[in-house]
Length: 308
Length: 253
View 1 (cartoon, chains in turn green, red):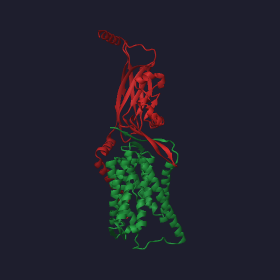
View 2 (view 1 turned 120 degrees about the vertical axis):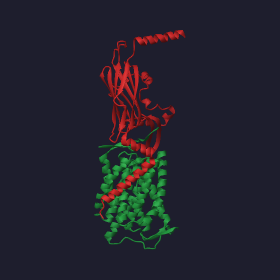
View 3 (view 1 turned 30 degrees about the vertical axis):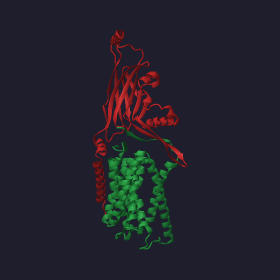
View 4 (view 1 turned 60 degrees about the horizontal axis):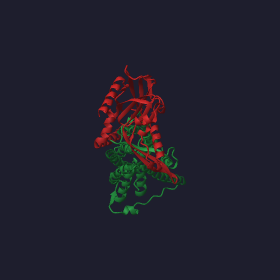
């Protein structure tokens, strides 16, 4: 059954959309990530214009992070204070992101920016996670524990001014690097249509030693707020949010996520990170192939816009 | 002056004695509605060539050429090139005022119906889709870009030349089938139909139809454009509510 999407301006199969939403939801439930880094490319591959794909993914991520954040909130596994600091930075990043997005769109470079950014981001994060999880698995086999930094052992960026204590996360650090992290994630997320959970979670663990029990919930809280604002700003300034597309993806995603969560509980931490790393790498390679392989057609029609 | 008037009067009276054909058109629809289930559409033009006792006798059959032009817009064409080991857009061309839908329909190959001279005069043919390049542009590989634009628009169904698009039902009754692709732009479509006999253009008539979004899709597209703040708030609210509902429904703890 074909469904005409009013903003993307093309018909797509309803069941394809529900299936895509479901698959992304399954993966996001399995790995506890938003899945935006898979959803946006998938939408582009099925023919949705890149701006609509990015803006609509933001709405999808907002919905799926509500579900996740509420669960962590109820389990009291969410540091609201840390989340708020990250969010303040994130909102600035979102604002800058929407501005940059529309500037690039006007200049006709948006598609290239999205492709290059996806390749760089996914390949580097994927490789890091891959190496790290392999290392962790080898260490575990050898019977050695992962090196842990001692409490009070502060790195230079934690000693910057504006220090704040975060009792829930058992740390005290300068607000500047935290807000800076939020800003970068907010910016990248808004331009690429990703939540950025797969960046925030490792960053908080490795750079700020936030306990793993709290980190996912806190990251979800920050993603939720920034993606709500991103959706809203994209609707106003980019006018590329397709509400019908978002609705079908969310409905599929919600169902898929439930199956994903159940499957995810059976996986071990390192295996889990290795699988996620491989998934990220595959998407990255797919984008890289677009750049490296000789195109079947050197010409492409980039945009057709009516002069009204 | 009086001689000029006399010859004009003579021409008029001659026309009165031996009239040309009349062309009457009717469209299967005046409005193509884009709804949630829209995947493309067909518009049929019915044409009747009217003759009476005073109409000049023709030895050959009538030939029909229909040209359909959709709303115009801007098309940006990119060409990729190799930079080191990656492929990037190396140059682009911007074509403004290109019809976003264009089709030429006939019952026979166009070349066998009409000669070059009359074709130009009737403004029929691809050059009215895309103006010919100026000599200066020709040097900057304009030729390749033009061909690519034509080819890509054909692949998208936005540019068609169908030699079987017109069906002659009777020698003086025909239909022309206009096929609109799924991505047909909204706006006014002009249908220009010419009848010819043995290469001589006899008459041209125009008709038009509108493609527009109706119902829910029109409402959404309008809201997104004109009520962006409300639309944005609604979308966000919908996303949050759905996420919350999912949490409540699938709650395990």
